[in-house]
Image (cartoon, rainbow, N blue to C red; front, top):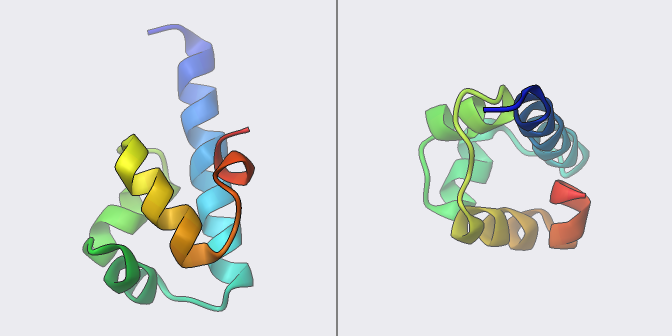
Amino acid sequence: MPDWVSARRQQIGERIRTARLQANLTQAQLGERVGREYRTIHRWEYAQRIPNLTDLLLLAAALDIPLADLVQ
């Protein structure tokens, strides 16, 4: 994969983490809201895994932010 893909994954993870912290949620609490384990949230935030489109939609709804704010 091109290097920019890894960089974008890290940016998306950082945006998820920032939005979660601004919402005053733990990884476990956010996981409950989107139906995923806290370990999955951690993996997304640190770009170890990438959320699919459905997950991104659930995250945006759970964090009450536009989807574009997570992936721009």
